[in-house]
Length: 74
Image 1 (cartoon, one colour):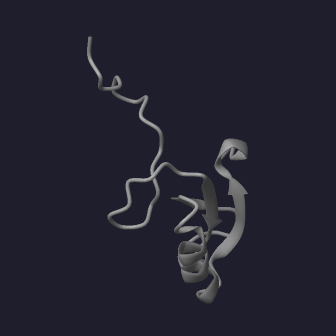
Image 2: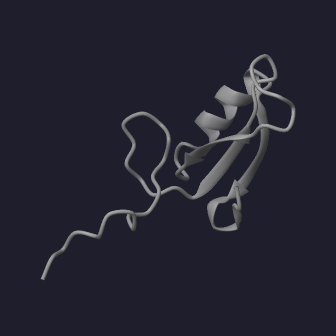
Image 3: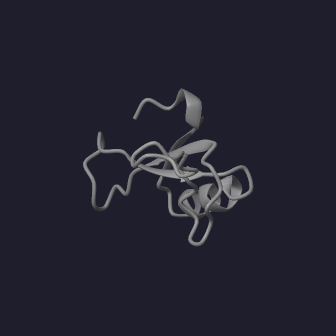
């Protein structure tokens, strides 16, 4: 019996470089200098890195919303 998960079934992980924790949050963002107003990009975050990633986006005026990953439909 294999202990690895089939391809495509592993849980999504945090977008913070080097973090392999399971994503709990979706940070939805847009860079208005590059993207059209309706375009949305997403970073995923674990509980530990949610604030760090949100602050990074917020300082630049990119963060649009943060939603629990299990409610994210993007």
